[in-house]
Image (cartoon, rainbow, N blue to C red; front, side):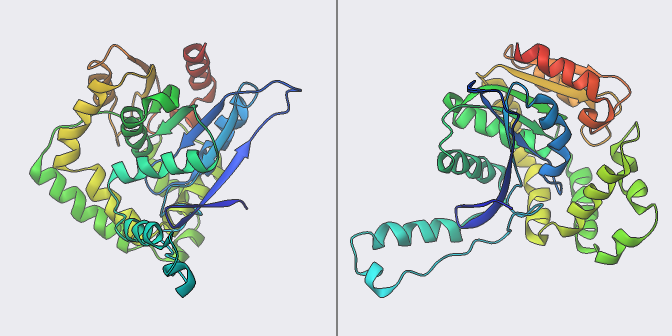
Length: 300
């Protein structure tokens, strides 16, 4: 499996490509959501690989990517060299990595730099869509077009947020590995996320990713993505987007209700809004034909 070091952390990535003779195709980067991995984007990437070279990767602390930085100690000879100062500065920056979504946007920038990708299309989901929105505004010249699936803005509610963080902390802490061996537990785990059924293999992959997610990353991103700061930041971020963007919502999404996506899109003429009926938090899997049609029409 291919890995690449991004700011001291080993990140898993993979390419999904379809041979097209001598034609050079643009690159589409896929970003997954909280406690997931690039695995659930594979079917979408395969469907779009006739027009794009698709790059999938696992966010820091999720899927097959590492959670903690591995800071290499420089040898005495290196320390004494002219390069030692820059090495030490890089090590300090790595050691100070946090789980702020802005940091994940910077992770993506470093990944693209290392792979020598100057301009890409982005297809991001849920928490990954928030990361993508921050990336669009930090590095607009790097993105041709963007698709944000199940994203939006929300109002701060102190009691509701406190209850969510308490519940989230419990969920992250209680993740025994044997949970994945219980019959039908994947159906129960995914029930809140879906309106239509998806293949058993997809459900089981979601559960496995959740069980394997790094504790600090899983808990840290709960606090940074659902917070007073995020509720104040994201409306401004959506309003500032200059990259043509499609925001896709699921009609019955309980995680990020469709109305939140509609409110976000209404802040900016650059953001188109599309609702997929009879789907919830994974419209790209629950109704792939409709999702792909909307995406292809937008990418024309």
